[in-house]
Length: 382
Image 1 (cartoon, rainbow, N blue to C red):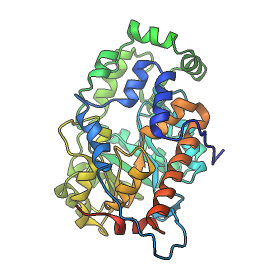
Image 2 (cartoon, one colour; image 1 turned 180 degrees about the vertical axis):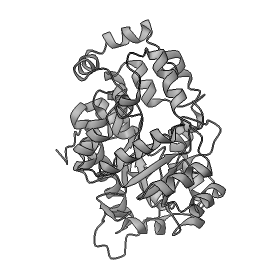
Image 3 (cartoon, rainbow, N blue to C red; image 1 turned 120 degrees about the horizontal axis):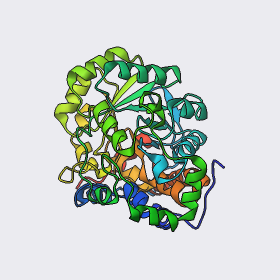
């Protein structure tokens, strides 16, 4: 299963089209969409693809090695599975499927606080080798309970979220009733009726829930009151005091996600963080922001002081190669594996990771790059 590859879907674009056919419109648009006019959603990928690499054809070449060391672990490729909330809404059991696929491929899997599989379930699937992304609660007691559960389950890398200080304005989600509080519309019900594979799988799996948070949520809440509870429970805006407290409380690696400027990268270094992820939440929060690849370029002075990673906008192996060539130590992908699961079900995660690895391998072989860390030597500076 690890090297499963379906030749009918050799690209993320092909997976996306198949996923769109198999998913109700509201679920597909939740996965596929961005905020406002979706300008930054498009900018992310477009500006990654503006990067050009220099090939060298006449040098000795011993083969391409994608293995990458990060925080003391050696992974089989320089990318991992990005955290995604409500994965089970998009495709039933997709969180569990992707966790297993990431484990099969020896890639890091990042679990979101608001995913649809619990900390303990994912830990069991990946034998404790996972990262946990924390949505910071208002209540420090709840924070400490979540941290304790993650640590006890084997997690040694905590990701704290900086790029969601407020609920996003996403017109498609608002129209589809997936805003806070959510609502189920007649249109959504009709869409489910016309997508029986999704609906029957969802029926077999049970309604998607915030499984990690389930024991803290009062029983019997309506969808409206559940949305209100989650709104009151989590504080999206990080502060330096919160980060200092987390640094004191967490014994493992501490990573901050959403850094896009040098001022805040400097704060992360000074607070003793181990890594940062350049991210704009997949273009889902701020339409007028810069692309992640552009932000990455402004943070190269921090190389060697802190691990610099990147997500948002990468849909292919060449995209990953361009991000690494531009100075990222590691990358994370979200939509491509989710399209894979939505298109191909249980085999979709393995297919997507196999596809991305093959694509990246080809790029490295084509330009004559033997090691991932050497990709910046192939960057063409315009």
